[in-house]
Image (cartoon, rainbow, N blue to C red):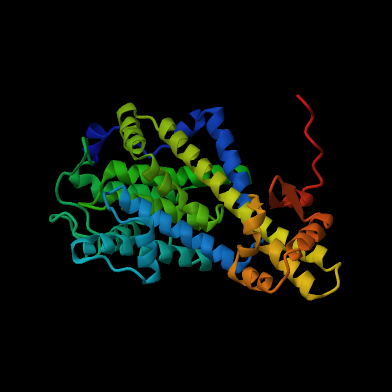
Length: 393
């Protein structure tokens, strides 16, 4: 008996469960995917103190939760979202619903983080996608005809976009889960595996947005599934897996425009390129943060190594405290040096007027600081001795 043709094939012909557009990605997009892989490896292989890693991951989680809810109109700011995460902020009654939206996303992201860390993330199924929607909408002021975690029974609009036919939503969601877990996104080559992981996550997001299987929370569900795929892959550090939601929020107008263009043109290359560029932009910022943390650690170690050459005394301890208090990325006026920290101010309280000059001279002779007019700055360039000077143009 011939199977009836699904309604979506006529109304939504762009829902094809095909990744053939990947073959037509521009050389630039492939180069960006290569850069993304290289940066992820740098981040993953950079040794940092556990406390610093924990802080970076928390900041990424908070920004990700803020972004995915802000896209949907939530107006809580980053400080408030951080307060919710740390149990230090409670929204006033008129904004309790926004707090609940954020709390649901934070809980869902945290759970995925923990499952990714211990390898217990379940395979993608239609039931899992429904569960994500249920977590997102739990006790929120969602659309009245939406039932958390259940397929919609009515037609929906997202702006000018109409979701897939109601009767096809269960089938399409099941097909999507099967497609995402298929060999389509697998490769024996590490470089290709990374690219396919990113593309798989983007397609998961795009298809949930296209199908719109739920009465509410489709965007947050799509971005949660996207995050889960990136976190599960082991190809990206967890802090990097949060970047895409932030990208969509920062470029919200283009985000909606690219979603619309993908369906109107029946082509996904532009959306894939847009998301990949955002991922790389975010990764560049993250590697700079990681390098700054690593540089700070290396600078402290270098200071301690140099100061060990001097006999232990009140003077050497004070000089060590002075250079450790100096920022390594800006000069400090001489008059402000002794008050950089309260502890440093105490050390200089009972010293004579020439003490600071002697301390600065010793640190300068040791190569740790440089004079900059009437200011002084940390000579952090002393650690970068392997690179030859740039040739004159």
